[in-house]
Amino acid sequence: MSHSKADNAAPEKKPTEDEQPRSAREIRLVMIGLVVTMLLAMLDGLIVGTAMPTIVGELGGAEHLSWVVTSYTLATAASTPIWGKLGDLYGRKGTFLTSIVIFLAGSALSGLSQDMTELIGFRALQGLGAGGLMVGVMSIMGALVPPRDRGKYQGMFAAVMALATIGGPLVGGFITDHLNWRWTFYINLPLGAVALAVVVITLKLPKVRSTARIDYLGALLLTTGITALTLITTWGGQEYAWGSKQVLGLSALAAATLIGFCYVEQRVEEPMLPLSLFKNLNFTLVSIIGFVVGFVMFGSTVFLPLYQQTVQGASATNSGLLLMPMMFGMLVISLVVGQAVTKTGKYRIYPIIGTVVMTAGMLLLSTLSTDTSGFTSACWMVVLGAGMGFLMQITMLVAQNSVELKDMGVASSTATLFRTIGGSFGVALFGALFNSRVTETMKERLGSAGGAGGSQGGDPAQLSPAALKALPAPVQDAYHHAVANGMHTVFLWGAAVAVISVAAAVFMREVPLRGAGAPPADGKGGEGGEAGKGTAADNVEAVAI
Image 1 (cartoon, rainbow, N blue to C red):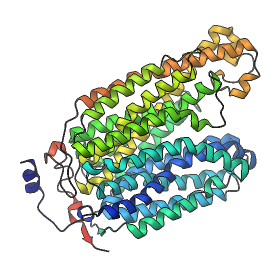
Image 2: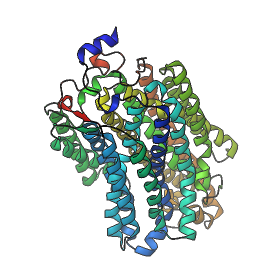
Image 3: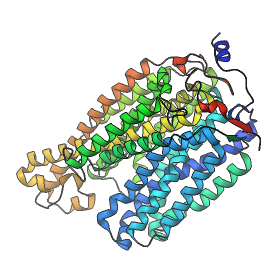
Image 4: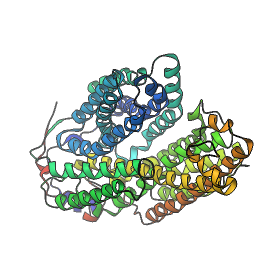
């Protein structure tokens, strides 16, 4: 009955790019290009991060070091929703290939940089392309593979994530030590060439032409708001105090532009991000869950290696290996859940289990102390990883299943954006809590000298493992306790935030997963059936290549 209602709301039209039947062979071939592209997107930051000390040593400009990362992050976050909308309007294949080319051009130019200013600018160009990589992968997969069948392939993406997290620092370290830091950028070129060739040859989609006008004002307002939010989380508590005029000014700018964006989106013919999507309960709830997953995941991956290196004495050389227990839990559960969804078509129980397990993992990690063994901490990391494994692909699947096929790109980019913004907030909040708790503990144990790094100068929350070993034994002991206390605070607050995702998962509805080319399963306006109804995207014409 729900299908007939949807059919009445959307008369049969000429098949669009998302409604063409796909053979299993075509999907498998396309997946090769998508997997390589996803590897590109995830490896870049991890590889480059390892080489940064060497880059600064050669190019100078250490005072601008943070902007090498910030320019890339800003461009990626700001362009993500724009890439998604362009794919919906003008075809996913063309926009996806364009994003790959821009990313590779930025990579090549970054490798050729002669000073820090050039590197920052070219990293921004690279980030502009990177914003379309993940969105392109997810929206193309959403167009080719029906939601119920997507579990067959999601294990590949989980494996790529684990491989990138573990292998990125290893590859970056090897390239920096045995080749040249410039190859941390050049290595993207052969991988990107493979991805381009595979996608061009194997992905057969109709060319899409749209008469809709691009929402330039909405794009400008959204880009400004996202940029301001990213700068707040990057600078707050680091470059500037949270109560500084810079941070407060950025906060006011973010609030004003995002309010203006919401006003504009309700009045333009083809909005950059249709707010009607959020009338869909499931779409709104998985956006919240995605934000929390990003918050927990990025915060954890930043601070767990710090604890393992400083308190447990783990080697920093193979830092990617320190996160292997968490990645293992994530990979195994993601594979199991994907197959279960494909077999049963049911998914609502997995976000509930995942958010509960993720919260439990954060609570267990909040018990880390100076006496916690490496085996115990690894077990708690597996629990956290398992919780995220229930959620990583399910959140994208539910978001895509909740909208009309013509809005697949917007749904994918929105889900990606919420996870990205959540990660930025997670790192910023966790960093502020950690630094405050470490400084406080050092002062308690060492007196006023503890606040100055144990009479050594510098921020006590920023001591490297090498610098720590050079300090007197009492200072080392105090710092170990300070880091353990900082971890307790970080993960306890992280668990409190994770509870929000539990509540969101409980209220999620079990909407049947649609097959290829079908409308959202329940056909209701509140569940995606009328999201974007009556927009200029109805004027899209599909022309076979």
